[in-house]
Image 1 (cartoon, each protein chain N blue to C red):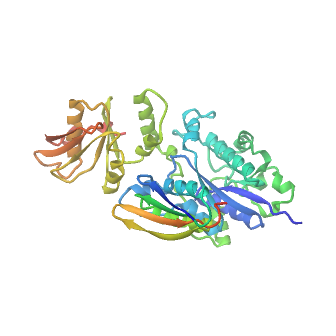
Image 2 (cartoon, each protein chain N blue to C red; image 1 turned 90 degrees about the vertical axis):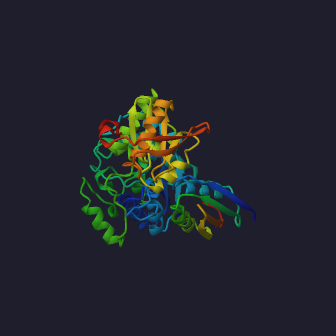
Image 3 (cartoon, rainbow over the protein chains, first blue to last red; image 1 turned 135 degrees about the horizontal axis):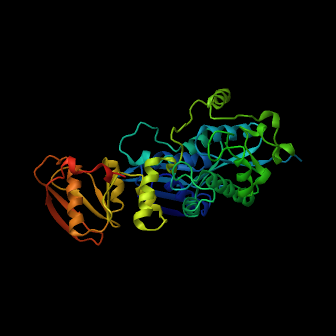
Amino acid sequence: MSQHRLDARYLLCPLPVIRTQQMVDELAHGDIVEVICTDPGALNDIPAWCRVHGHELLSAGSSGEDIVVTVKVVGTTR
Amino acid sequence: MEVYRKAVALVSGGLDSMLAAKIVQNQGVHVEGLNFFTGFCVEGHTHAIRTSTDRPNRNNALWVAEQLGIKLHIIDVIDEYKKVVINPKHGYGAHLNPCLDCKSFMVGKAREWMEHHEFDFIITGEVLGQRPKSQRRETFPVVARESGAYDRLLRPLSAKLQAPSLPEREGWIDRDALFGFNGRSRKPQIALAQRFGLNDYSQPAGGCCFLTDASYSGKLRDLWEYRGTKQYDFDDIMLLKVGRHLRPRPNMKLIIARDAGESQFLRGYRRRFTHLFSVSHSGPLVLLDGVDCDDNTRLAARLTARFGQGRDAASVRLDVVYSDGEQRQLNVRPLPAEQVLKDWYL
């Protein structure tokens, strides 16, 4: 299991979702990705993407001006 | 051994593609969705920039995927899509919308995905006669041919008006359970949605693409004209979605935030453009795209003051931060409303 950080600040949805998807595609089951965003839409979109693909949402919230969404990879994207 | 067929559906987030996927899913076919992000998508985008919005803050393609219980793969095609916008083989629609080329491109990308992932066929929500440019009897075969999908392209909503596709001929799909919708009426789709128990769906009045929008297309034409080249990068097309765009002079354009959300978004471009903001009164962040000579900077400052809370003040103090990082302060008189010419607005 490894921890990763994805800087998706100043990207508008769906780009934070796309970047998350691209990173998760390269990761293994159990890996964790912390996505840093500024678009509040990510608070809805990344959790929705997790539900659709069966990944586990560990947390989603604001930290100052940033939005931080943490995802645990379950299986693979496909 | 029974073989489970797999179909990949183009999912825009609207009703038609949702129904098309649902129809095929109901026949026991494994369906996954694809959603292509071109950079011009209206979906889930500028809604996020503006401070206040009455629209649900969600990505409708993901929402559709959740309702259907299918995976959705959102694919970045920004760079590849440029050739479609810049030089469409079949030309533009009413504005800069290259709808027929766009549909062929997207079905072509779906075909590549289908082949790579060993899926069997492609589903779209196209309805015959619904779109004047791309969804006509003459253009359906063009999309099938130019995408390379040929008869692996199934349009469940209008399938009965077409020759049977491969999935129908092979018995993967029961043609009797498909539809023969024709024309611009939305009633058959709405009735079918009710039959499926689908009550919450998006029906964007202006379509799902900014290129069908007259104002947006006008701003893109302006960009090409004043750049002297028909090219764009991603930031260009994003910025065309945000703020008021004014071109007071051929060599300067201003992008003026309309609310706090847009100001926040434009802050992300502070290093690329000279930008201005009032320090004596509240007001918008303004980007200056073009030549930042003294004369242009002063006019930009007076316009920045015009669109802020100090518009009626005798003098407004502003910070001007040049793209190279140099900073200066200016005191200006806001430009009177009557001197802001209508034809400056893009």
